[in-house]
Length: 101
Image (tube, rainbow, N blue to C red; front, side, top):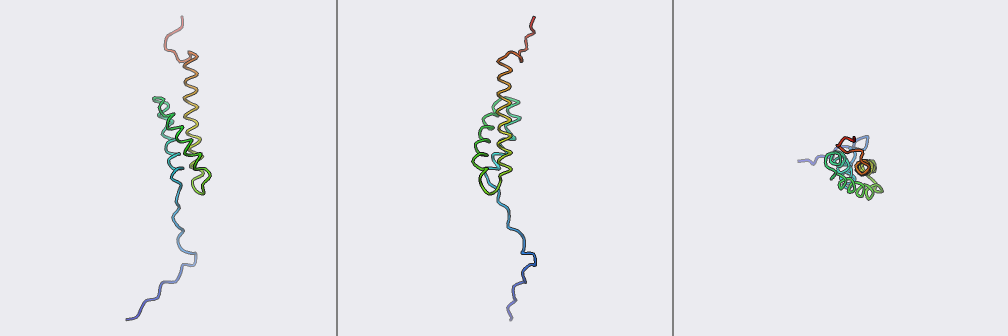
């Protein structure tokens, strides 16, 4: 019984190691994307938007997931700005249902 030799190495160095994405960056992007429709529907999405901004800010300086973190920051900021615009329009009376006159 002879022992088999290991197979020769691949000429290209083998398969690349699996990419590990930053978990905070993933959550930031997910929360940011979910916050936009929730802000439009009920205004409570701003909480998720703030969480997306915080998580994205903490994740943007790590080695992986920078683009996802920046996407989470941007979409969370859009959610917060949308709520601010809605509140200003509502306070100014531009969104009143009663006809003037």
